[in-house]
Image (cartoon, rainbow, N blue to C red; front, side):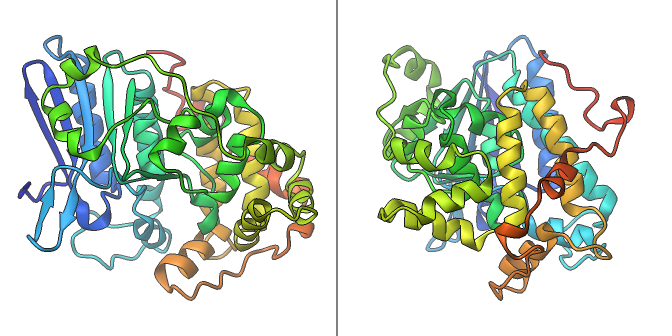
Length: 375
């Protein structure tokens, strides 16, 4: 059991640096303080010649013992309640160490995306233990890892469109390239937020090795033996790949929806039902994001997503934001009835979506101007 109250735990032993996300009651959702603690550790370890490998994991809450266990949900994403409170400059949880305001929201995304970039370009092997829930910010932390381990308990997704956002943290980059960049696959995952099992993640090439959760602790304690014994393997075939290509390779979100409507397959009906719950505008924005990112470097994609997330929250509460409305409806008030604007996919124009890709900053003032294409 892990009893400390710290949300980020670190240790170094025998050249192995270990980092544990330890906020299990919140499924290890990331706060700004956690992002800063993780970044501080990774930067320090990067420059420490005695460290050869870095390991990442998340803990799980055991209600029976009232304590956290070594493995479970890796990370459910960013702290969504934090986003909502930051927009409205309100402090409702005394556990936060700083006033929540627009500035801290801006800092959250700038520092999170910088951290994502760091992991992707890390000069030492990183092993990510993607057990349990791995969503949103959890994917951003792990997709750049050298070895991505999943288990029979893994529940992986980029579900941001469900709350009126888009799959950020480099999602445009790694979703557009999953399954060897087959057009339609990344689009399907990004637009529907479909949950993947560990086996699914392997087939999509969003993970590298599938093991049983009971073996995690042994690998955590002796990662080098595990790495030496890793067999070469090929990713299994993707289930329903033909349907993803048929429907989600279409040019526009309207074309994708129409294609699904014309199909009698249960798969198409399920995909359509997911899309019809989501923000029509953010579906169009997300499709454009994936299509653009497929031709971008990670650095350029992160800069693009930083522009997009600014527009996603910009102007509130005086100007409508589907992102803020989705968080309010699905997370805060839980009325499950978001008032999307526009409310119909047919009413979304190209200009509406394109506005999200106009940077509010010049190149010299961009908050991610410090990122390099390699490190």
